[in-house]
Length: 194
View (cartoon, rainbow, N blue to C red):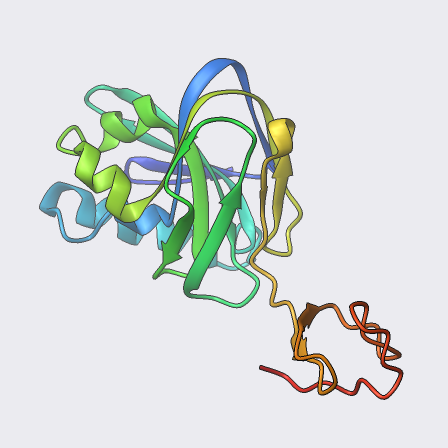
């Protein structure tokens, strides 16, 4: 465990929502943001703790942010390939489909904890910066490689999937096995990255 300012980071690879909870998935830089004066130092502290040697927390962990409204908790993990746009899958009701990443990582926290850090966060902010899942109950795990899985069919993959185009039938195929197209079974299917 390391603490700097109002931020503490610890090891951790899962978060358990024991009761139905509205949760928010986003790049934590949108919540603990440097663009709001009182949070600028918190974001700097969070980044310093992650990359301080020995680098124990740079791939992911739990972060706690002390605020006037109480302590907020979030599970964070670096993405496999940095910034981008990543789809969130879950069988629960969700608002939004993907998360944009600008700081090379994603986080999951309760909506209530977002409000503890950012009381000014509006419905528009939630829509602009990530995905809200309503009444989520269960556990979400990180794998240390940028991927997430959990209860209710929750998944979020940040690893790159290779996609190929079949020269014979024109289908797009992810995870081509190197032998044949699964649609037309053309054995001359060499494909190309698209």
